[in-house]
Length: 171
Image 1 (cartoon, rainbow, N blue to C red):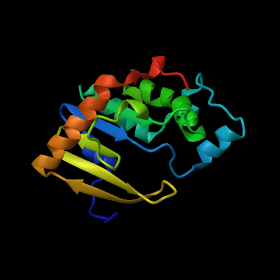
Image 2: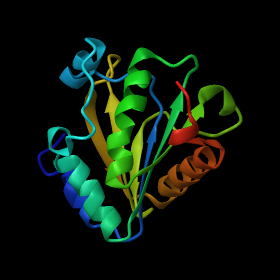
Image 3: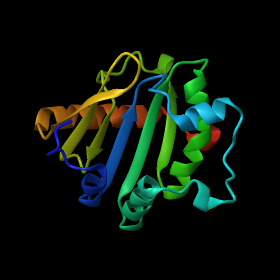
């Protein structure tokens, strides 16, 4: 990603109404947190200081300003091990104020979905993630093309309408 690309905190900080994130992959590049979870280590949810981080604070700050932050995940079933972990750690996002929903991939056949994950900020700017085959981000593309923004907004709304709220989605 070029060094001139805006930081996520700046993008979210400039939002006035909404920030939506559509995730379409069943696995992403593994992290140490994922590896720890696989080894059986669990988060002590009562010790907020041990898991709260600047990213979550950025979300909480935006929500506190009245920005609706929503995330929709399209997943295959049965879910991958990575998605089971994501479901577990989604509690962090919920506690930061995000609204998260899940949609089984089999329910998307009639939807026109983009091929990439993305963030859409106030429907005025999109940050599109491009991944390698192992799930690592290789580039973020930014666009304010009105036709593409309209497509991304419609795709997110279509998924959101069908998706199951986090608390009701069992993995």
